[in-house]
Length: 369
Image: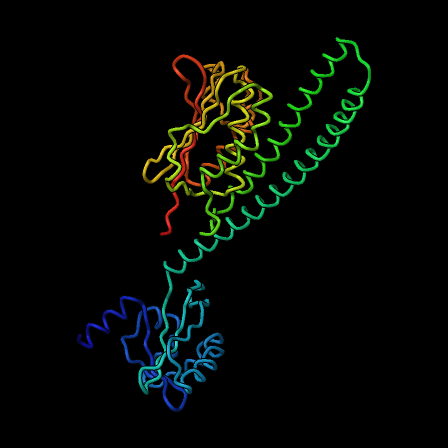
């Protein structure tokens, strides 16, 4: 590579190349860029013996560190950071210097930053604005979290008082109408309790979704194990509703059912779907849970023999605050959707041709890679 080519290249890059001399002056070893002559008119009068420490207060300070750098022959490059110089016309230009050693030679580079500096400043400003917005968002979320937990705490306290009152009434001698009213009140209390729990769970899921999901290899949930646990936990409820809750006999129990997700949260998602199915299933019907291996994904189905979801409401099942004639679906199913999507999965609803519903979740299977 010729010296003329290197000279042209450095000039095109607006780089001034100088060599440090024993008497602390500098000699120019490249073409002198036009901007350097314009900024430092007096200095270029003697390009073989420049006193750069006298041209700029900023350079004077930087050269103290640069001389120590050259003296110790350190590897790498010592950069000055950008500074501003005001030319004869009053216009401010942004410069940056760098010191390095090339064998025994001590080199100083000075570059006019120009457009690159303006772009850097623009990006830094955007980053600052985004950081400010993020900080404001975090504060708003924290306010929302505190408010919701206060509301939930107050509601739970009130519901606990109602529950204790119902329990006390249950020990009294009531008329048939009074007993029926008590049972109605207890059922409504249970519905309100579930609603409060769903609100807290949905809000918690929203908070978690703001952070990237990380899963340790020793905490991988087993989908089949979660299903079996839910069936065991809801056995008494199923018996009360006179509904047969079962794991589909065709499920391959020998298959590897490890999926991406959080075991406790996944179990709660399945519990939510199965509880909904039990509430709508008529006596002596079946709630069937099946698993299907789809290669890279696992599919879980929860099927009931209830009345199904009205067609006009099916499209809003997984939205926040959504309701159906079957009861409160909004927060529970919303929580399920937020969690499943956070793990890279999908969730949906499909009506049966004759009767009943099928809710399904599809999750990526866990791979060690």
